[in-house]
Length: 194
Image (tube, rainbow, N blue to C red; front, side, top):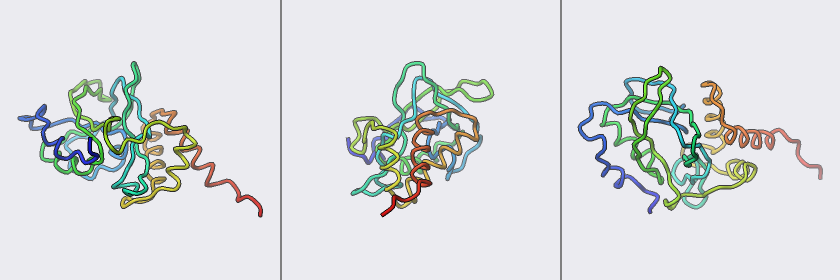
């Protein structure tokens, strides 16, 4: 599958006829909502974990040197914390462009922080997309992130802002925080002599 998913996402009809849709954000959508929303609430989804396994050719990297950003990977009984936004359907056109680098719309159940369970959508980059990079050790991912940058800025900013946003929500994410420790440890180590 091509990493440009705009046309595929525009074919999704699950929410046709809805005047409002809940959107679940688990990466930059947590801290960078560059779209209009009606309501914003901390939320979670079950059976998914956040992983830095997706390449970014258009935001945090380039076609020749993609950065690494998060996607969701299925894991039974896992809970992934994020942010839910109640949006109108016209917002999807903007989101389809923002998330075009391999992400597909999926319907899912969200648990909002006020106890409500609602159906919504989430953008997930599956292993079938051309930009998928797959698993690597946290230290290898941190090295990759440290050397990557794209039109939206350094890849390290994405990681650090995500880690900060998760802490602000009091959400635990061992994968993100381990990569952050690897990255910040590299930044604060003294240069080798000679």
